[in-house]
Image (cartoon, rainbow, N blue to C red; front, top):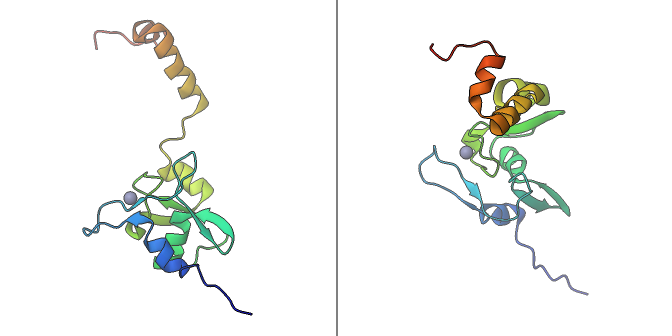
Length: 130
Ligand SMILES: [Zn+2]
């Protein structure tokens, strides 16, 4: 009986899947598979896990329970540890997640698209000659 080792060491595999930039400030773009939201995915020990979480654990250490890893650069496929922070979901929503839009704001944007901004200025009681 013999074992055929075709798998690379997971770290090497991980390191081969993004474009590491020499200057520390740039995003390291994940080039392997991604989710619909653009998050990089990495298969590790038979599971598919978000690449930025793997990056955080590899470079910085364990992610505390109930915490998420957030990219401060807002680039979902970035795995640069300098751009990764851990926070709770609610912290992330409050402080960092500017892409999540309040339902009222969504309606407003929809209205602007449908009717143009002129009428809305009236709705909100603002004068055009500000
Ligand atoms: Zn980044």
